[in-house]
Length: 182
Image 1 (tube, rainbow, N blue to C red):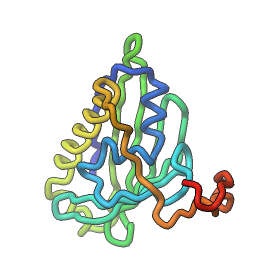
Image 2: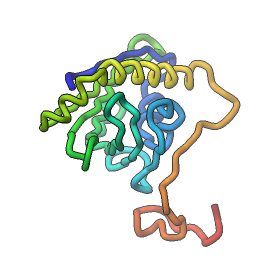
Image 3: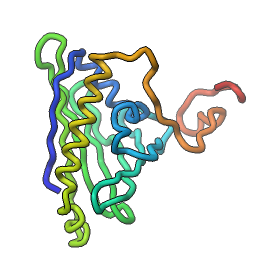
Image 4: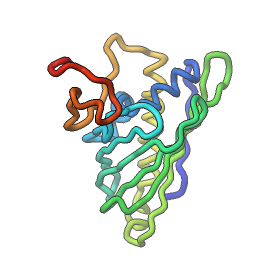
């Protein structure tokens, strides 16, 4: 799929917007309209190395997508590697760019693209996936903007790690907690 780019302006400092996007656990708060069955794949949710898996319901292309942050340049850029399609054979990428626009306003640009190798995967993507992706990403950035500009009294939704046991956190680079403590 050729690159799909969407942009928005958010009335919030660049560092705050960057930190929210860089935390994979908060993606369900603004991307759940096209990311079903969202699960973190690693206990580390923020920054380089954090990863997630979700189900995308694109036209003629229902399947799971795995996403991992591979480049992290705070507060300018986040680069994610995607794997999707049957047996995760279609590589893709997502790049977030955060630029200061005016005082207290951040310009967020999101570009997503894939490079299917097989003809069947290219054919599936040709049936409206580019338009579907652009509409879903525009909605996602609009919802991200509303998180900052129209804050809710409720806390943001967060995703969890399937099968994660807090008392085993040191194995995964986390902090030791007493068994039974939340």
